[in-house]
Amino acid sequence: MSVNQRRTGKPSADGAGAVVGVKSDPPPRKAPSGTGRLLFVVHLNNMLHNVANMMNQTALPFLTKSLGVGNRLFGAFTTTAAVVQLIGSPLFGRFGDVYGGRLSLSVSFLAMTSVCVMLATCASIPVLFLTRLPLLFIHVVPSFQMVVSDVTDDESRAGALGLLGLSLITGIVLGALFGGIVTEKYSPSTAFLAAAVLSLLSTVLVWFTIPTQTKQTKKKDDKSKPKRGVFDVNELKRLLRIPGVAKLLGTKFFLQMSVMIIQSILPVILTDIFELGAQDTGIFFMTAGIVGAIFQVAVVGPLSKRLKDKTLVMLASVLMTVAGLLMARATTVSHMYVAFAPHVFGNVMFDVVINSALSKAVPQEDTGAIMGFTGTVYHLSMVISPLLSALLLENAGFPSLGLTSSGINVLLLLSMLL
Image 1 (cartoon, rainbow, N blue to C red):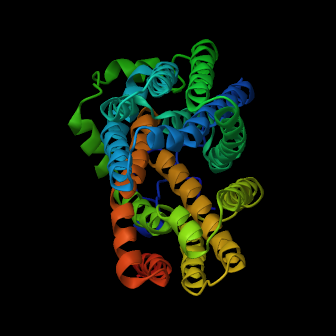
Image 2: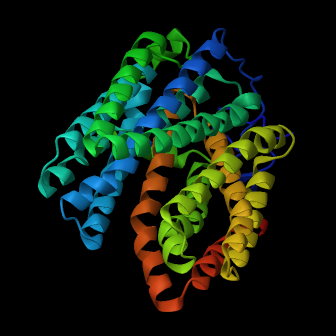
């Protein structure tokens, strides 16, 4: 099968239409020894990070309410966070390539610790906005994706990247649970401080367990190449010129937009249109997360070894097209549960497959930068989609969200078929 795409950056017999295609020469790179232990550390810290992050998210509304933050100001607060991370994603990806996984993850976790401490001591709206500045350095997920891409071979990479979703959802579920308990029984500040302790623990763990450099480049090759800096814009342009990379990122952006048009305003849909309470809304999100994690492990991994990347991306687009049409006709909560299943399946599938394909399209020394680009795509969609979703919901009604999502996916399917 043609997922054995190598890091030569040259088109394969499948051509550009195969999503990413590179020649099958040289032979596949094998995973290094000790990979299992390293992946365990990655998943443990991925879980801890998402526990801390979800504890923050659970306590944050109580903090903003106590500070008198209205809906419009909270929207500006959310957009500020997305813009800061949008700026940091590609640069921090290059930082990981140049300085290695250990340092990039340590910086991310230290920045996360500082955010938690700032939130715990926050007493004014200006300070609340200042807590968004360290987000410039918090790119834990792309850093873990880089490490996983570096230490796995092409055959097992999609499955290994998919497993990150399992540790992620475990952290989200535990974080939501503990965050709610601590915030209710003690205070939001206590929840923030608990998250700070977890982030500091992750800093120590990654510093002593993650190798300084996870890339398996040969020393003689390193000596022959000029030193590349973090802020070298030409290096980022070079990545975009690699065959298949720009098309993959463009495909990911539009697929991500079709997802975020729904998800960016989903809490409003569930509470205002379907009149769910806080507990039922939490159950909906928890169910979606658990189903997505199971799908990653049980379906995406095996399929990635049997089908071409292009086929999987097209299947993901079909699933989200169906989901959008079902949502457009949803009138009950049960309908939303049914419609959201293919939505989650498609989202999980395209995210894992495209990230894996991107990591195979570039040289190993550039996996951090390319994962940074995927973060940029995500945060760009986070900047655009809330406003677009709000306009659609206000002017065209709830069905327009599902129809717009389906329309984007239909256009993508046509572009991949032609």
